[in-house]
Amino acid sequence: MAFVLDHLVHLSILVMLALSLNLINGFAGMFSLGHHGFFAVGAYAAAVVVFYGAQGSVPAGEAAVVAGSASSILWFVASLVVGIVAAGIFGFIVGVPCLRLRGDYLAIATLGFGEIVRILAQNTEAVGGARGMEVSYLLLERDVDTQNEYALLYAILVVALTAVTFVFIRNLIRSRHGRSLVSIREDEVAAELVGINLARAKLMAFVVGAAFAGLAGALYANYMTQIEPKEFNLIKGIYILLFVVLGGMGSLTGTIIAGFVLYVLDKIVLNLMPQEIQSLREVLFALILIILMISRPQGLLGHKELADTRFWQRLFRRQRGLKESS
Amino acid sequence: MSTAPAPSAGVPVLEMRGVTKRFGGLTAVEGFEARLGEHEVVGLIGPNGAGKTTVFNLITGVYELTAGAIAVRGRDTKGLRPDQITSLGVARTFQNIRLFRRMSVLENVQTAMDLRLGYGILASVLRTRRFREREREITEKSRALLDLVGLADDADERAGALAYGEQRRLEIARALATDPRLLILDEPAAGMNPQETDELGEMLHVIRKRHDLTLLLIEHDMKFVMRMCERIIVLDYGRIIATGTPAEVRANPAVIAAYLGDEE
Image 1 (cartoon, rainbow over the protein chains, first blue to last red):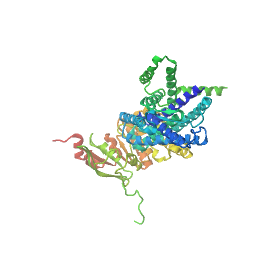
Image 2 (image 1 turned 45 degrees about the vertical axis):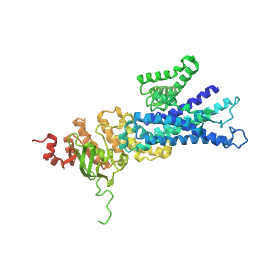
Image 3 (image 1 turned 60 degrees about the vertical axis):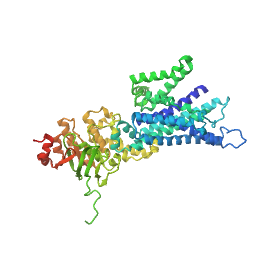
Image 4 (image 1 turned 180 degrees about the vertical axis):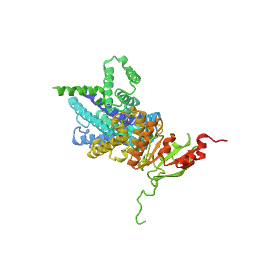
């Protein structure tokens, strides 16, 4: 049970990251390779709140924070909020210079940002340097007895917040904000000439995308006992980028489906295959990517959502037909 | 005399004075002057490379002026971004069609109404009543515009999937969605057969009346220009070589020389 829930937490966090990346890369068409940087900012910001705030506020003499107490839960919520806000601010800071960049240049600049965050964390003693930071559990006491409870509680929380992310971004896309972003992706000059404020729309995408990556990071930091700089490397960024590209740039449901498939595949190779071929894991992903780019360059769902596909509509119509006939 | 004039009375919709654009050592447009009153239909013609599209790009703020001044409805556009100039009431179409190809026909028009929407991110995310009302309003307006250009039945089609002539009409609908006072058309009849060109002319007349528009158009189809326009400006090598009614321009030796070459 706890095993499945643990994977659910990790998968949900990755999906949350990928959904927010899709807003920037897929809908707004700004190819960013630095999303793991926002993830790191959120994680570290939350870790700092927990470490210096929650743990720091424990009066001398008492052993540690009491997980599950009212103040601990408040600190937990505060760490999420700070993670969101910090990443959002970084989204703005990265977004401003990136307004002038396009295509490969934007990709390189954002990639640079991701590396800077990681290396800064690695060399800053206040956040533990290369050792990383310890993050106490705040939500609930977590030991052998409560392992299942904790996993269940956290899984519910993370899945719910991923659902919120999905609805938030979907609603944003199906509004003037989404139309502006997609129109910029389609033709920047024409978009500006029908009255779209390019800078504002692009920055909005960067800030909102980064903020959700920050939330994912904060959830991640609170779930793990320990975060280390090396977890937030480019491979992480590429991994979630795969969710977006394979699912379809501009398809949120595609991101979720691709995320699920890739994650399960990854864990199967990691856990069930003999040790010798585990190192081939990344080769496998490269192969999947190459095959898909040749056979279906737009990704699984292209820029459609699941409900817009013929497959889904046929399924739906058949159900309705059955209802009518009965 | 007795009352203050209405804000727009007497103020030209577009005024260009000494407009000059240089790209490095190349002077694309020099000393361009124009004054377009309300409801005027003015043509901008000239041989290829004369600087016509550059003039359009200067009006819409895509290029920055090297010298001179442009005012839209009395407001100097210096330092304004293209989207701000659009909000002053200038809309355009493009020589090589620039639609949002992977958006639907309806969304293309809706996107151009963004200026008038003004609800925030939270309204979008929470689907507030204000959001729903504003969206319903612009969807109705967008459909009316599609009806006007004869694309009502294609609203849910992908814009890129439309036939060529339909794409041109969609560009016009999209331009109208910004609620312009001045519509500038870059070769609207390009690639059209004579019948389509006639229909376009009629459509533009209807649109101009209904939307209270001033039109400025670049066109190579001389029959179309002569019939549509009350006044024509002729450019050659970035300079105005003639202005006047179609008949005057047609008889102007400088214009004939520019188009046919000088007799030495």
